[in-house]
Image (tube, rainbow, N blue to C red; front, side):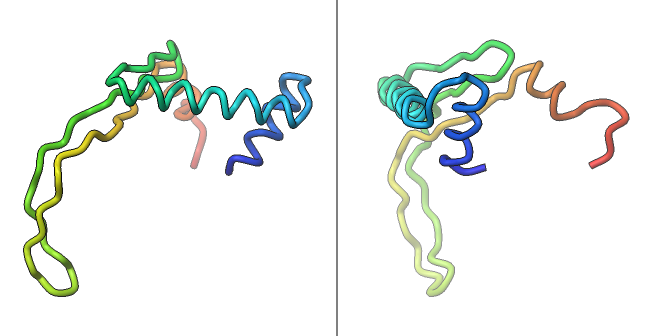
Length: 96
C-alpha cells in the first residue's frame, strides 16, 4: 500500500473527501515527525509505539572498494507493534 492507496482507504472508511483525507494524513505525518525530532515517543495503544533511538558513530566498509568509512552518529526510529496489531496479523489457524 502506498500513500495514495492509504488516502483512498481513509476517505472510504471515514466518509471524508480524498482531499480532506490527504490533509489529515499529511497533518498526522507532520505531527509525528515534529514529535520524533524532539525525541518524544509516539504511543498508539493497541497499534504500536514509535521510539526514537540514538545510534553511535561507527566504522563501516565501502562494499565496492573495501575502504573504511565512518558513519556519523544519528537517530533512528524503532517501531514496537502493539498486542492488537500482532493479534490481527497473526490470526490462529490462518495460513500465509
